[in-house]
Image (cartoon, rainbow, N blue to C red):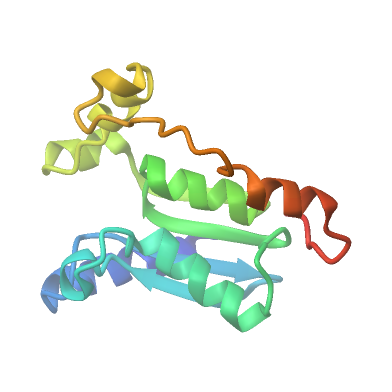
Length: 154
């Protein structure tokens, strides 16, 4: 376990030293073998979703040819943010291990507290207002999904 956590932390450190992104790294492990790695590349890729955990999940899913990681473990240099938590729950690994806490991250400027707070605010009062648009056929894809015999549920 420590070997994989050390690798996640080293990926985070390498990212800072090489100036390729934020101080975060992650590793996905299956049956004691590394199947995915990720580093934070938000700024180098101009992609706000390119967090280390998301990158590691994408890497592992591609290698394993699966959209879920049920038999895998995720090792990450820091407690996952809300976005990464969402990706983790969708990927369904059997465990997540982290080194630094969200409070540690907040102390260096990566504070996600406002996101958690915004989830409790009514849509129209959020910092970025969320507006429901009524459209006659808005649920047409949902209806087609429900009727489809070819769908792969997840």
